[in-house]
Length: 301
Image (cartoon, rainbow, N blue to C red):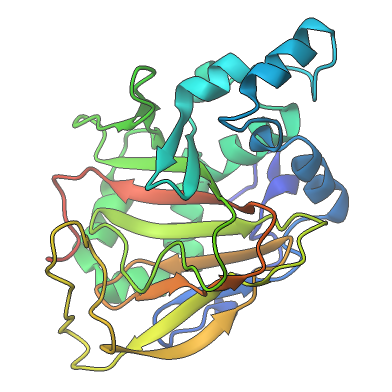
């Protein structure tokens, strides 16, 4: 499968099929995922570096003084698509390219590549293909036979929330995730599995150079019970959270700059965020996923 011209931003450029670890669920850890100059350019033009709910007016004033963080920066557009999540996380949902004009060129290249039709098929068939065939043989065959274009989900500009297009059963999605500083020992996401319409997830960690905190890594769990049985927390609002004590911590992937983590979403892809201590900087990551529409569930919760 020939690479497109913007493949220098590919976090999987050095990855081989043999790099996929099967246990506790199919995943890959890639240190120094991007060339340093590409990563540095992404870091310096990260759109949420310059946007907080408390200082947006300050940065609007800076724009009036012709002090703009990077070409194309637009705090008003960013605020349209940025949403508060449970008071401790900022999420910037990325609409299609034509509407993401507030991104720098290097971010446009990065996101367009990882949400493209090419990349979706590349990761599903060449990198995770063996495991996709095992876990979801019907989905694997559907991807083979699907002739439509796979593209990024639209985002409602009024709500900032991704919109489902039922005519496109295979879609991609991208979101900037910044976890705000909290009290020591806080976890922004305890053990859980992702939505049953999600096929794969790619997380790029973008640790701030001045970040002196400890913790905040990605915890991978193995299911304590039968591999087909998961015990979910049934409390209202718990979502896909796993009951405490029902998963064994298998490994910990440190929260380090320019580290990417890729995993296949399965009924036992249990993961969570390690508690973080002495946090003074936002914990930054960028998440890209391949998805079916919500009416197509890969497994039952």
